[in-house]
Image (cartoon, rainbow, N blue to C red; front, side, top):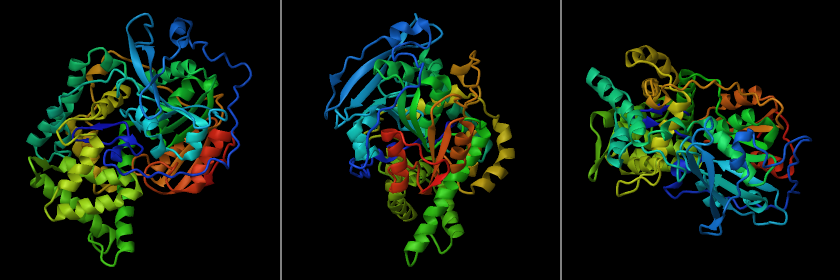
Length: 519
């Protein structure tokens, strides 16, 4: 999702939310089943280093200076203009990490990757490539992870102190009184004001369009005539934006866990609320089906009501965990984090059972993992600040607090558990300070003229509902839809062999899967 919610930020990303807990699922599948075929540019495609605009020649002509950065990986800094409308002005550095292909002689190409967010440092997808990707990718691709501008080590945006970010994340996500509503709005506004105060200039130049333009400069610096790319979750928005801006540079793109770029803020929030409700319902049903006596109750409705009741109880009286508290906002983070991957449902059961007994430590740990917060109160990255800073710059629309009560009934119908939270989230980006004075033309994304683009959707995906994948595949002129029938966020390397083979066959061999393939 691309919407910031004061007290609740729901990133659209793959695995990264739980990575800090240390629960990775690695599947070391053989690469021998594939016959690698490098992508071939269409006739008339310009040379790799030819710029999209002559004024950008110095950036497109640059060569990356790779240095060893551990575990056999190499790192470099790509130089790009802060403002593409002023290429002779200030520049910024984009951090790039390369995990070289195991089989350099049989290498297909460089594979740019992005794990989502927005706000997640993409270099982590290269440094943890063995957790994200199966053996065929590691064999045949140089995995290229990059931190999009404003994230990770690429001129990271700063908006709040660690203490203020703690307060922001732990705030009440669904105010019920005028005083609570006032506090909510103040908290929401603090992020935008902080970005402008602590990161002047940068805060207005970290949009998805600018990050996509950085990707094309990176493609050129890698010496690739066309782009080979795997983007997960928000990474699909970044990928589809790239395809629209540079359709002639599209080689092979896979967009997994798709974002629908045509949705309004309200439509996006409403469908994602329903997506998390569907995922939570599937979790409760699994508990009922797999145990003689599910601790949540004997029906899905009972289970959902008990979880909703826990959120209300913690809202009224937070659970003390050492020198901290599990608030309602943090409890919701702890509940949604394991929904990203079915393998982590056991963690949700542990967290809920402990919280029902008055122990909020497990849910708090899951919430901290989501936010990359360490035990000492620091944050390993700036993803919780970059997420609203990028989201709200892309779309600074929203509603006034007085309009929220009118939205609640429809949101609660879509999601009895999370509906009110999402309804209040519609306030967050309204009048975003860094977007003032900017009037970019919205992209109508169809990527006309691009090579086939494979879109992967999962039927019970909580963060990027399946309907979004259907929509994006239909909007792209060359879109090809692959459906994974399953739970969790994104489809590749999820335990579904059919889906993983379809993705690998396309990226490694160029074999386009059948449109409408269901796995």
